[in-house]
Image (cartoon, rainbow, N blue to C red; front, side, top):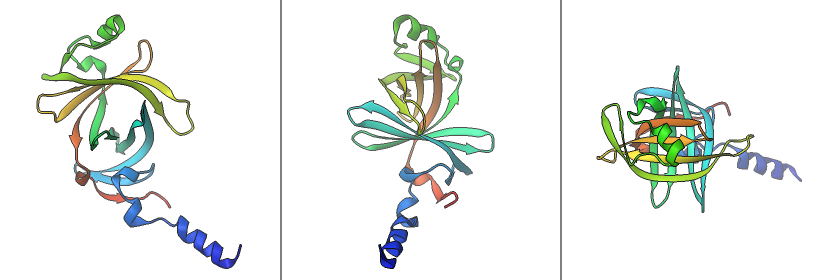
Length: 180
């Protein structure tokens, strides 16, 4: 290996700000502006639904606030921004329904708004350095198809719930890398 090879290798490993500072290539430590706040990417995971269907999820932190950005690709790329909430924020006893019948109701009410079951699926969540975690999820959408509530079941009686809205990639600006 000559000096040219070492120099060429260093150039290939260099960070490319035009190609690497896109929303779909966010990494832990990056900063991004959204909704008049600067967010730090504090975690990343992949949801694998099988048959090549996957979703990438980044944890966004701004001060004490934590939210999640998900990128899913089926026919089109779809972006969603959500915050966790307690399952008790849903008017119906969804947890009991799922435990008793293995399914939630087809319609739920959350914070005075009606949501309708849109899709469900099972898969595995992968985080770097951790064992895959299996889950089942149900997505409910409002009549305008703009807002959603997601219920995830992680075990017999362990549930997580999030509410959010669909977003567009252009709404996220000033993507900056963490320490290079």
